[in-house]
Each structure stands twice: as structure tokens, then as C-alpha cells.
Amino acid sequence: MTPDTENAGARKNYRIFIRDLEMIASVGVHAHEKITPQRIRVSIDLNVGPRAADATDTVDTVLSYENVVKATRALVASGHFQLIETLAERVAAACLNHFSVRSVKVKIEKPDIFPDAATVGIEIERP
Image 1 (cartoon, rainbow, N blue to C red):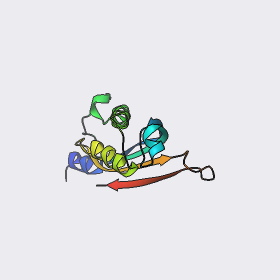
Image 2 (image 1 turned 30 degrees about the vertical axis):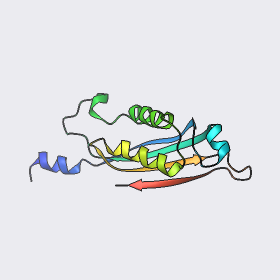
Image 3 (image 1 turned 135 degrees about the vertical axis):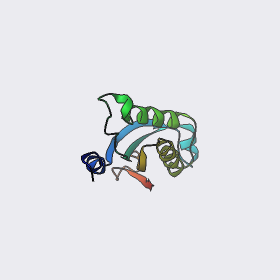
């Protein structure tokens, strides 16, 4: 094994995360949820493949978390979702469209549903 192949093997996947991105969304099955948008929190964990050994110190050599946030905001704003599970699947699919993403975990919470619960929600993980 040459030093170059040893270094290539040493490069590891890394994680990108977005925690508790708050947005107002049109989501829910109840009549009042279809009329009045509500607050949601979205958290995303991405397992991303290693950067090239010769990658420069520029944002175009990585998956930008700014782009992930922009794509998530656009999805949420695209219309009404009956289920947060559907929204989570769409967020996950958008993330997995990037060639460097190996897997994604998406959590969506609705913090204002029950006055006696801090939050309710779902979490999915996709390879």
C-alpha cells in the first residue's frame, strides 16, 4: 500500500447537522390545521462521504448546510402536507439526491399540539 492509498483509506465520512430549524408550515389532518399554519421544528442529520484528498478550502467542495436549509424551507413552503411523515420523506429524498449523502435522519416536531407536552413528532432514517 502506498502512502497515497493509505491516506485515501483514512478519509472518513463526516456528519452535517441542522438542529431545530423552526418554520411555519401548513401541515395536519384536522380542519383547523388546514386553515391555520403552525410552528414546526425540523432537525436533519446527514452522513456525508469523504471529501476528495485534493479538495480546496472552499464551500463548493462540500455539501453546504445552507443549501440543505434552503431546500427544506422551499419544501415546507410548497403547500399543505396532511402528514409530517410525508414532509419528512420529501426532505430525506431531497437530501439523498446529493451524490455525497450516504444516509439521512429527519426529525419533525410540532411543539404546540398539546399544552402538557413539550413536543410531538416523528423521526425517519433513510440509507
